[in-house]
Image 1 (cartoon, one colour):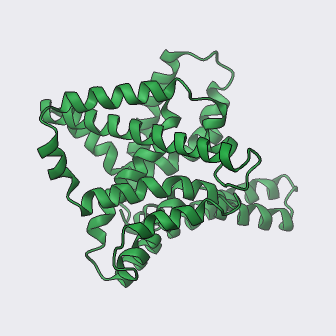
Image 2 (tube, rainbow, N blue to C red):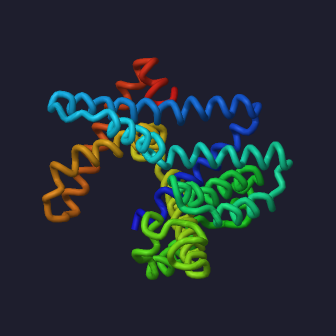
Length: 299
């Protein structure tokens, strides 16, 4: 269920927030992206690979060629969402500054991207591209005021979004995962079939994102207490959560709970404990300036 829209939702929000970054000079925007995204990727991958190399050295199993190969792969393929929100803003920056913000250019670029072979995680970046652009344009075109004028009751919009998502989710299957069928009209499925998969995948991602955003809006409008502040707090540290989770889940939780029978109670406990650990870790990193800069991009 969550895989149908969780990363699209992040991309929509990232695009929406990026609109305000566009008020700065392009050079400043590029430098900030490099510092806030690529430096953390480099530092985290380096730390993990060096740690793994140290363990292999103690076991007398270290091989330089294997280390270089693994290190290069992890730099290119780890934390793919951070790479996606590095490349997507560059395209927006190009269209807005060089092409004078012509909206049809976004569609033309998407069409071109569909013909790129799915290699080096390019399919994941293409997958995120429409969500990021829509989020950006929604802010640029004052979509919030448009929504307020067009929608009198949030729950009406929520009902429509839930119905749309539910209907689409009926058809969600193995091919719907971006990791299984990727995105490229030169894929194994054939151009027409692949295009149908891609359109469906984007549609359910948008439906789920809209559903989640409206639901959060309704909750925040109705209850302005501790729960909302907690939600906002985790949103603010989501960068650190995303990175830490990618390592803790892969190297820690799977070894502890991997043999357990799937159980909702276990999942809830895992989530609560994990989020508490991530929050504590981020709080510690934020208090050490050099660590905050290198591992959290100065966030």
